[in-house]
Every structure is written in structure tokens, then in C-alpha cells.
Length: 248
Length: 271
Image 1: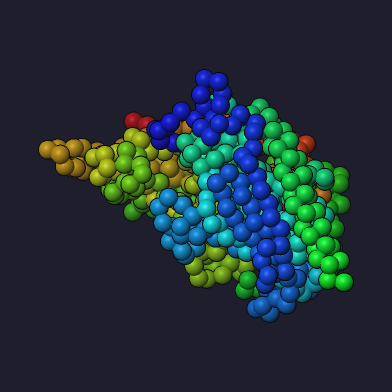
Image 2: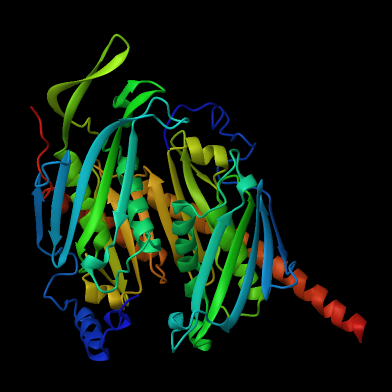
């Protein structure tokens, strides 16, 4: 959030370092069901971010003492590969990864009908293969698709993006450079059809008005991401039905 | 968890909390926007550069600040170092386990760290002795002593109070080297942040949830508010949700309540 800016994050015409307008998302691609072993999986590319998510469960919960009698427990492991960032990251769990695992889990759990699966565990494994700003929100977007791919009943998908502030201007979907040198970062996750916000964090500095304006911008962008999630799922279902028809 | 029974609230008590809230009342007779009694004691640890114990209702937290000369991080050669560590030790509650910090400890440390850092309460760029070689490192260590809910606000109040009252020996540069003098100086201070945590129970928003209220809450959200009513940090927690309208209401509530909370802070050492 501080330090000298090596580059201008916004040019005279209000264009960002990667050529985007303030309210423009990076190119977003979601692929569903690419892993064989996992019960559900998804791969997301958001700009230069590349993240793979696997979901296992609902399955028997181990160790036994974590079992909850009237619902499933949801566990989440967010991890960054050592080669995913500029300077090699130690493969062990950083404090950042521990916190992000928690907030991602808390962003996804409200969407899951956990009371349908008592005494079980739903495990969400997130591996960041390449990171360029916004990995927690891209992880949530992908993980919710992977949960759907696992056939787990959901109240809604969860889609996420971040609002940032660069040169005093609110922008959507911060990239790595903007995250590092911008004046603020506010990740938001939401169940779009239900209007329920499941994750909200911020650092940097926002006025009360910027907070309200930023929330509105994020909700708009989240609706776009939501459409891409649904298209990715439909594409996968069409593939499956085709496979089934051909095998008959 | 060592003792799961501590995490279960009786149905009767839960119903009482919920039915009182429907009448805008709370189980401990507080108003929805009212903090529990706050008591701040500073400077009680002689060997720390700064310290504060905060009692927030049944919650007690201590923060100690220690300062030492260190090598700066390679990517910030011209800034001092701020490190926050928080531990929810088993001394403070049967629900806390011994062992390395878990996700709750880590979240608490990181939320307090970001709130302090974004407000720039400690002006790290004024804590450089020899750029790239020697800077002041400020260690802010938080320990829960008694857990009665809303640990984030209590930990932040203790940390801010400890920082405001921290003194350290001034260092001067002589012949390219650092010499520590006998002169005691306060930290270079920027904007002072206040943390306000709001719990959502049903469709009600309440500030400063007690332990029992935390057991029935759907979700919580913490706003960090600086001197100029800007937001310098947000953290939503717990697997529940907020609507857009609730978040706007919570933000306005946090800004309003932060003013009362700010008056409880110790006055800054200035001489």
C-alpha cells in the first residue's frame, strides 16, 4: 500500500497499465471438471492468474473429533506454488495463506446446504499456479464452480472480485502491480442471485462514499463473472450429456 | 477445541438473546450500539517500551511493544519494520488450544497489523537510521488473557494504547554509525485508527458482541476508522452474509461509534 510507484498506474486518458478502463475486468476463463480424482474441479485464468481447485466430498470426516452431528464441516486449503510469484515462495504455509484459507472458507460455506450432509467433510483444495493480484477472489470464483461440479447442492454460486484505488480513482479487479502500489484494496464475494455478500475485506484508505461506490461497482462486475461461471458449468454439462449419448 | 461444550449455547439462552433482540434489547441490557465498559491501563510493564491492558467487559487483552534496531526488509530499505503477533493462549479460555498459532490467532494478528499499517499510526518512514542497513523494528505482541468476546476490538485498543504511550531511546548517527542516547522519545505518529466490530444476529446489527452473542451471531464485520472518518481496514468473519444495505448501515454505525471509542484512548506522550 505504500512505497514509490515505479510506473504510472493510470495514464492521462484514465487507462491502466494493462490497457484496461477503470471498470473493466481482466480476461476471464473458467474450465470445469478437468481433474479425474476429485469429485469436482475447476481451473480459472484471470489475466495472468492461473488457479486450480479440487473439491472432495461430502465424505467421511477425519479425524473423528472434527465431526459435527447435524451438518457437514467445510475445510479449505489455499496454497501458492513456490513458482507462482516473482521471488520463489517457501512451499510451507505462510500466515497469509492461513488467513486466506479461513476467509475463503467463510465466503463459500454460506452457499452450501451443509445441513444436508451431517457428520461429513467437504474439502476444498486451492493451488495457485501463477499469481498476479486477486488470487483470493479468483479462487472463490473457481471454488464455487468446483463445488457445483462435485454435485454439492448450493444456494447460489459465489462470485468475487476486488475494488482498488489507484491515483485516487476506484478501479475494478486489481492486478498485481496495482495491488502493490495502489492506495487501497477491497476484495468482495457475493451470491449474486441472493444479494448476499459473503466476503468483504479492505486495506489502504477509503472514504465512506468511496466504500459505497466501490461496493456498487463490485456488485456490477460480480454479475458479469457470475454469467461466465454459469456458461462454464453449462458447457461441461453439455459435454457430459454428449459423452453419455455417444456411449449408448 | 479442548472443550466443545464451551462452544455450545443452550437453546433457551439462544432464544432469549434472539427474542430480546427483536425488541431491540440485549441480554446484558446494553443498547444495540453500546460498548461494554472499557478500562485501559498503560505502562505497567517496565521492561517493555510500551504496554497496555484493556478490559472490554469480560475480555482482557495485553499488548506489549518492544523496539530494537534491525536490518530493513530488502524491498523497503527506507522504512522501519512493524510486526504484529497475536496469540489466543489457553490461559484465556477453554476454547483456546496450546500449540502453534491457529487460524484465529493469525487472522487477529493480520487484521490488527493491516488496520494499524493502513492508518499509518506508526510513521515507518521516520524510523530509518541508515537506509538499507539499520532501521527501528517495532514489535507489537498481543496476548489474550481472558476471553469474553470481541477480541479484535480489545486487541486493537490495547495495541493502539501501547503504541501511543511507547517511549524509546533516541538514536543518532555519528561517523556513519548508530549511537543510542539517553533521551527518551515517543514514536512518530500518524493517523490513529479505531476498530469497531459489528455482529449480525438475525436482521439486527449490534456493536461489541459478547461471547454469548458471538455464539449465536450469523456473521461479524470489523471496520477500522482513522482520524478523518476514513475506512482503513475491513474484515468480515464467520460463515454468514450481509446484504448491501446492511453493509452501508454497518459502515455508518462504525463511523458513529468510533468517535465515542476514540475518547477512551490515552493521551499521546508529548514533551
